[in-house]
Every structure is written in C-alpha cells, then in structure tokens.
Amino acid sequence: MKRIRIIALIIFSSCLTGCLNDDNGIIFSYERVPIEEVDIADQFTRGETYDITVSYFRPSDCHSFSGFDYDRLSNERTVSVVNVVVNDRVCDDLEETDLIDASINFFVGSEDSYVFRFWQGRNDQGENQFLIIEVPVVE
Image 1 (cartoon, rainbow, N blue to C red):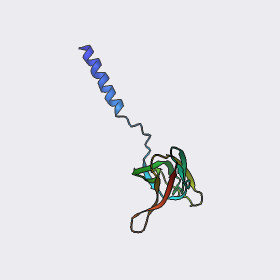
Image 2: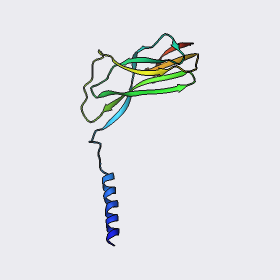
Image 3: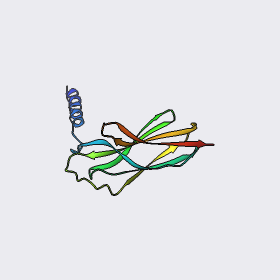
Image 4: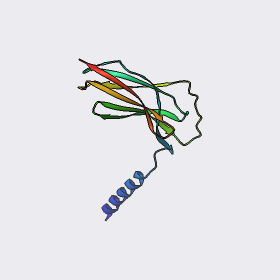
C-alpha cells in the first residue's frame, strides 16, 4: 500500500510540474517585414554556395530578426524576412533611416537559372508585391 502511495505521489508531482508556466509571461508574435534591397550575384556557378543579403527596416523597437520564410517551387524561390515582435510592452516606432542586413546561404543545384521573389509588402489592394530577380547558372 505504501508503494502505491509513493507511485501516486510521483505521478501527481509530475503532472503539477508539467503544468507550470515557464514562459516568463512574454507575449510575442511573428511578422513578415518588407525587403527593401537585395545584394545577389549576377550569375551562379553550379555546385557553389552564395550569400544573398537582404535589407529591411525594423518597424519598432519591439521587432527583432527571427529568420526567413523560404519557399521553393521548381527553380523559383520566394523569400521574406520574419521578425519576432514582443507584444507585452509599449513599442516605439523607429525611423526608416537604418537598414538592417540579413543573409541567407544559397546552394546552387542543377537548375539552369533561379528566379527569386523577394517579398516587399502589400499594395493598397492587399496583394503581395515582390522584387523578382532571375539569376542564370553557369558551369
């Protein structure tokens, strides 16, 4: 009987500690931010890796770089910058004066060319806008 109580106590304790809130109360979300500029090679060599650098503005001091949203379909690559936004405090808007750079490594595979679509936000009708750059591949 004592053994059953100990096992029950261990299970109960495990359940309680598993339900503890350990996120420190930070509320955040993710948001795409428009790409303003792109630094990309004029041509690629098959089998090489290239740095592609994009530049964007941070909308507020609550925005920080989180990574890229990267989709591929055949030889087409769609790239957007994702920021994490801390939503548990009052944020100050930032002036659009200092561009932030972020780079992505791109390995050139077997395609003859690559079409990059860099997300630049939405127009007045809510349609996605892209900077489209085609890069040929040489041997």
